[in-house]
Every structure is written in structure tokens, then in C-alpha cells.
Image (cartoon, rainbow, N blue to C red; front, side):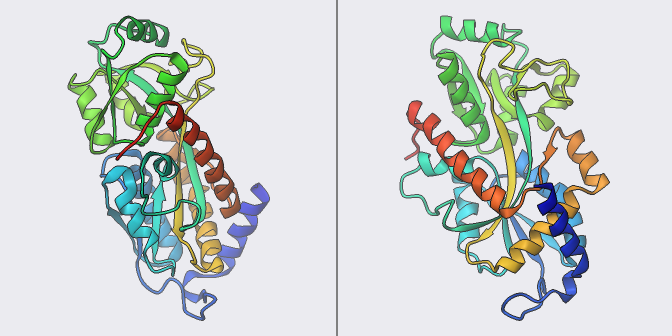
Length: 324
């Protein structure tokens, strides 16, 4: 994988963006690139997009315009990207709902494997199970015990059906044999605000968004969702070690282009993204946000999507999750 990234980066460095000719003979990019975020501002996908946007713009020699097109758990913005002209001027940044929605919705407006060309898996990170101080649980084991004594009586906030918090919560329910009810909000920001205000007691939040509120004492962290503890919250145990063995949830963020985007454009974008992600400034910023840089090849991202499609399909089926 590392050899692939280094080779792509070297090729990108050798071909200035302004002099790159696509397979169709056109100079690429010759106009601004639209990076569609299929979720509202304030969530993890939007955060990652806004971190990589400026350096990617510098790398390709054109403005990278962030465009939030939220709704239907990411389906609205994703469909928009799928139908865009496949010339590299429209890209999509997405996360787990990109594949999970295929199992949740009937009549999907896009096929995650056929309608897109994977460009790069950017990064991954754990979420963190957090609760409002009013929730009488100080560990995952205590929360599970509380949920078992009050079946259907506890709620957790999610950023919409099929979003990362929803998937993480239903995996928790499935493995813990409990029934904590999802309350859906229109995005990660509103879902977090609901817990901060005590409207809902529990949520699974991207670690970068949770850290400030945990540090201030406004929220209590019970466990990180990875198999290893996070450097962003080193004192917080994993969910698996704190009461639910076998639990693992890692969110990811990746960039895709519409299918039929020329291969040379996909490879150029992959190389430029790799150079951005491995720069000292962006590496440090991602570490600060609790994000682990991946910078995959297009083929590695494609294989990852296939595995995720199958993995979360099993959870959706087991939990009887469905959005009409």
C-alpha cells in the first residue's frame, strides 16, 4: 500500500496540475472543483472536507468549493454527485451511510458500487459513547445494566437513519442485547446539541466533536468504539473492555467521483490527496482531531466499500432497520 501511495505522489509531483491533459485531451482541472458534503455543516464529514479543501485546492491549482447538500441520510447529495458530469470537477466526500443506506432504503437513487469511482479512503477514527451527566451510568457495564432494567426507556440521538451514530447505536443494541431507542435528528450537530441540552441522554459521537465537551465536563465519556484506546482520550476505556466484549465501530471518510470519470483523473486526484494527507500540517491537524490518516489507493478503497456494504448489511438485517 505504501509503495502505491509513494509512486502516485511522485507521479503527481512530476505533472503540474495546470499541464495535466486528460484522456480526452482536455487540460485538467481547468475550472473549480465542487466537493459535495452530503450532510449539514458541523458534522465529521463536513469537518474533514474543510480541513482538506484548501490544501487540495493548492495542490490542483483550482478552487475547491465545499457544497453541503444534506437530506435523507446523505442520499440527496450523493444522488447529485452520481448524476454529475464525470470529468473530475464534482467529487463526493462520504462515510458509512454511503453503503449502509443501500440496505436501509427501498428504491435507492444510486448504487454505491456501480455509480461511483472510488478515489481515496482518507482517514478513519473511532466514535465515543457519551452520556449527559444526568444519566446514572459511569461505565458501559452500568449503562447496559440500566438499559436492561428499563427496556425501551432510554434514548440515544442519531444524525439521521443509517448515519454513523445510528449504526454504532444499533450495533451496541445487538451485541448488548438491549433496546436503547434511536431519536433521529437532521445531522450530527443537532444530535450532539440534543445531548448537551439533556433532551436525549446518550449518543455515539465522532471523537473530534466529543473531546471538547468531555474535557469541559459537560458530557461523560463511557467508552471509545475502537479496539484500542484513542490518543485523543487516553483515559477513556474502549467499549469492549468496559463492558461489551467484541464491540468495534470505526468511522471512515473517503472521496469518490462519478462513475466513468477518466482513470487518469482519478489517479491524479488520488496522488494529490495523498500528498495533502501526508503533509506535516494536515497530519498534525488530523491527529488533533483523533483521525488516523489512511490515504489508500482507489483499489483499496473499492475493496473497503465492498466489505463495509456486507458488514453493515448484516447489522441492518439483524436489527430490522428500515427507512421507508
